[in-house]
Image: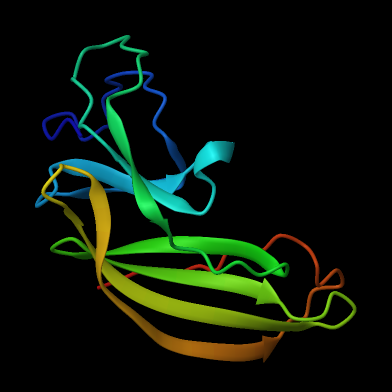
Length: 152
């Protein structure tokens, strides 16, 4: 953000390894998000902060978390990763319990991230908090639905 002109500045055309949002974590000194590539589906990944060079199109160096953060359910229809500060994250998953019905389940899990002794990204302090069922008003209950969430 250019604070003198009060407008955003375009710094680069980086291809970041995230599906959806990426979150900067100061303790990890990296951007963190859900992996966008098929071989990393269901895993978190992190990448270095890209250089602020205009026109840079190379993907920054990154790491794939060993553990799968998504539950292995057939009815999985979307997920949102929320950054809570100090390497803590919350994952909100949306699941369709029965494709013919309008019932959905939200699964909420929080965890920390850290680098292990080998420098690999790993999950720490894993805790499942809640599972909430609700009915949707969508005409097509199997439609893709990422939950909307934020942290304050």
